[in-house]
Amino acid sequence: MKYIIAVIKPHRLEHVREALASIGIEGMTVSEVKGHGRQKGHTEVYRGAEYVVNFLPKVKIEIATTEDMLDKALEAIQEAARTGQIGDGKIFVLPVEKTIRVRTGETDREAL
Amino acid sequence: MMSMKKLKIFAGALAASGLLMAGPALAEEAKLDSGDTAWMLTSTALVLMMTIPGLALFYGGMVRKKNVLATMAQSFAITALMTVLWMIAGYSIAFSDGGSLQSFWGGLSNAFLVNMPVGKINGTIPDSVFMTFQMTFAIITPALITGAFAERMKFSSMLVFMGLWMLIVYAPITHWVWGGGFLGDAGVLDFAGGTVVHINAGVAGLVSAFVLGKRVGFGQENMAPHNLVLSIIGASLLWVGWFGFNAGSAVAANNAAGMAMAVTQIATAAAALSWMIVEWMLRGKPSVLGLISGAVAGLVAITPASGFVDPTGALVLGLIAGAVCFWGATGLKHMLGYDDSLDAFGVHGVGGIVGALLTGVFARKAIGGTPGLIEGNAAQVWVQFEGIIATIVYCAIATFVILKIIDMIMGLRVSKEQEIEGLDFTLHGETIHD
Figure 1 (cartoon, rainbow over the protein chains, first blue to last red):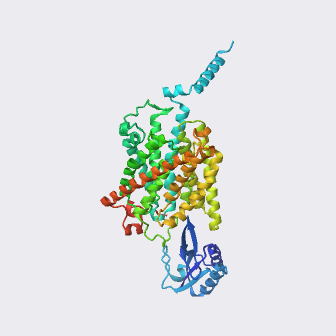
Figure 2: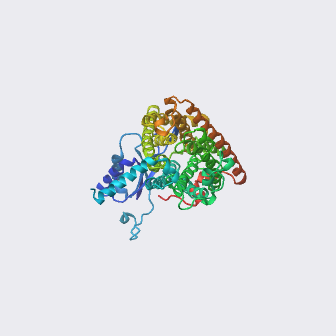
Figure 3: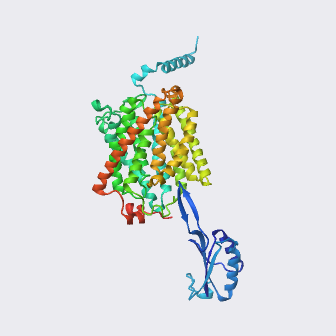
């Protein structure tokens, strides 16, 4: 079992969701986050006072997959999230020790 | 032979025309005019709305989220406190006859409104309406000051400061200009409160900003407005409510009120446009904050002039005020290095000064009874200047002294930790859950 954390541009979320759904991945957790890699922030000016905003809004998607679905999931996410402009985001893959469905108690593959 | 019905209509018309022409005789009788009264009741409500929620929202949106409740609470609490203090002493100090001290203050003969029985007429409206109308001015003036020390003043000290300030600074200056005091006698033209309200609040704000010092992290931290939607709504309520402020200062539903409303609208719009254009040219983008700030600057500047200038004068006044207040809220602040957080001085102080001076320039005898510079009366500008200086000097000194005394007794600023955590929770025990 693997856990995928993908930080992407907010407006690509719907594309990623559809891409994952089309390969059979329905479950995910989404959060609104801020971040930056090498992408620079921007400056806002309020009555002459300048504020540099370094952190940009991003969306974090978290999903758990089985090993056999991992590569397809990564490909789906990357293709759907990519714009070609700086700031497209990053994807991390972590190992998962256990997955449990709260309602039924099913574990691992059956919990997905 | 006329029918009875026509006879009654004819008699009514005759009586009405007689009333219109009787003028001075009626004023001496102090007869209640229901049109005037209805308008003044409405104006009172409009001006109260300018503070709650107008100013509360305007300021609230501009501070950081952790301080929004505390900021809005200041306007609301000041509304409550000034109401009571105005009733107890403020109205008397401002508008009663102070006898031998009449030039400077009205005394306490009307403390607790003992001289305001239900049937008493003031001009053509009930005295109670005039009192409450003026009360709403005594409410908004201190509330304006809070913009200067936003995000760092103790709630308790703020209440004490505002209470003392209203009685010691606001009410006397009101008396000087409108209550039979020396500035009104000298011929200072201030229709709705350019000196009494805006220069007064602006200067007190400037002094407060210097005495309290800058916010922690000023110049380094991101202190961007947390929700300009609130500020836009607030500014809109200020604009609409200001008709009560300016047109209501005619204390009648008459030509003066009508012209005051018209010039208020024109000057405000002109100022919004001129701030917008200046900012667009200098910064590349016309900000929404600039647009609403320009409008407020215009509202401030037309305030003293609203009963004296014509539409063209208002147009020019507004265009100038927008541009000058843009500088007041940006260049001036950086030049002198103070943290007037929400530009109480930059917009209200500077706008009030510009408006008061330009009143002396654009006043037309046909409109308000006194000619200004454009009609050959250059002396009026000097009279305006005297009023401005008197207000600035007294307000600055008195505000400074009051602040310093409060500082010695109970402190003015919250602790650094409280300021960093935010005033909503540290002062009021509440947070926004969104």
